Length: 445
Image (cartoon, rainbow, N blue to C red):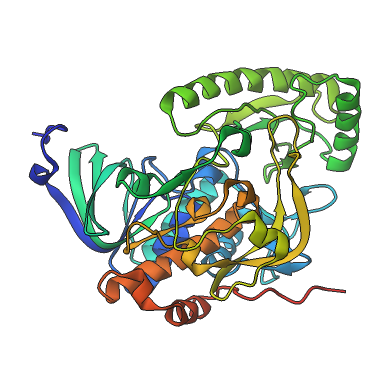
């Protein structure tokens, strides 16, 4: 007999005890769990869907952007390992520009200086293999309902699985939920992005039957149609699409709407709007974009793609002033860039967008919760002003941030649960031993 959901949590069964629990198996969560497992921590990763990958698999976006900048690779470590695994499987290629299509040749041992396209199923399988090799226990089909917190620490998370509700205890936790669901549900300090600063919500989709995909030619026609006002959704004023690994397939990013990602009612409304837009868009592409005359809908995202919603309040917060003035970072754990302001609500570029040259590191303390001493955040849930999320939200960078969160959590578990007590030098050394890139490469002249 299942435990009734509305019984006091103290009466719920305990499903397990761990050193580290990672909530969310998106790109950041995968790398967080693998990093902790590689350091010997008994690690569990919890995911509400039945598979890993997050936005890359759930939202039909197997496009791992952010590995390169200024002609150099800036995201390494476990993210690099995962791509090499998929390359060996025949499920990954770097994107060749200007065509914006997969290269013919395998990646091999070349640096990842370009964005990477993978297959959705290949990523699901490769991520599971990566986690298994790291000794990580996986618990999918399980939602995080809340947490048991006391004295500035989370002691357990309350989950609901197929078998009913229960508790999972750990010494440290990683919030890789995307919208800081763990910290928020535990009553910790979080920051919500205003809708006008949270970027558009999207449902991506794939079409087949595309011929001679060459993005510059397609974008030229698209831009002319935008100038003429001959587009179904005028706010979408930038052509966004890429050829997939399967011949004749392309991914299209054209649907858009606005709203909060933090209520089920808003997401339900947006999901309905966006699915209507998908059908309109496919017909419009057939009629107007060369190469798409015979295209047909193959697949859509399982859910709404969210770029910004809620993040933690950390011991340090990345601000617009930091990015604009390139404030030095004393304790780098990953690398980002300095441009922000894409996917605005009235056009792709926001009125407040900035495009600064160069690389800026991600500070360690932006990952550490100000409310709970034993919690680190991964991916887009780290502490920042909403408008600068673009500097690090791309998937490859979320993966490197996740690795840093997992390392911090594993070392924190060994030290009794206080992540700050671990000290940055120990985190840095462990990250470097796992192949992370922490220093900006010298730009090519």
